[in-house]
Image 1: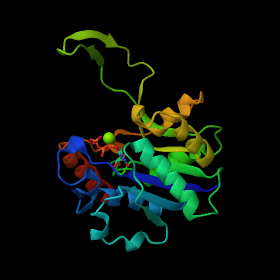
Image 2 (image 1 turned 90 degrees about the horizontal axis):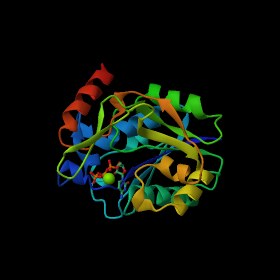
Image 3 (image 1 turned 30 degrees about the vertical axis):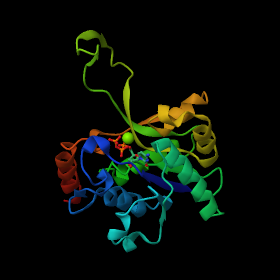
Image 4 (image 1 turned 120 degrees about the vertical axis):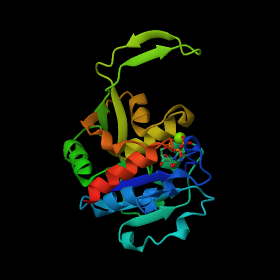
Length: 233
Ligand code: CTP
Ligand code: MG
């Protein structure tokens, strides 16, 4: 089986509070999505990288992507939720390239995780290439967890024992992932593994680190920029 990356990039970035969708905000001199694309395209494991854009995306074509031309395929088939964008992308993938089969591994990676490294990618692929189900990068929760009511009054402290924060890439076989995403309520899930779990399967967590965080709020931009600068030196 081969390893194929899919980057859902059809979100609006509502929590970022910027006119421009966050995947295009400038980070270390490039639009955010450039960085994850660079890592995925430069991995010798990855056969092809599909980018899934909103049907009305007008930003993508303002940049030059020719340095990724040997692996990059762009599809304007994003949906209303992340899960819809991924499922539409998987369908488009099969239509575009008849050589892609159900047993191929799909690595779904958020456009909003620009700090992914080749090392983390290799760790994921090495850990899961022979796995029955597949899995995802993740890190153990570090903070103490409080449950609160609507007035922010603490109702209790949750044990963080055994709790992890899910990251991407999330890696599953094409056939299984399509089956899982077609059956799930796409508005109720925020990652791919949830859909696999809903089938009764248990994805495996592969230890990552905090650098692969998701850029969500405006204050995340400065942190991502620092990490990317460190990566380059
Ligand atoms: N995404 C997508 N299609 C959607 C929603 C999200 O392809 N309908 C993508 C985003 O572009 C992003 C990834 O899924 O790369 C992770 O989602 P998130 O961080 O939630 O991004 P947004 O949904 O754009 O941001 P927000 O939730 O703040 O609106
Ligand atoms: Mg979102």
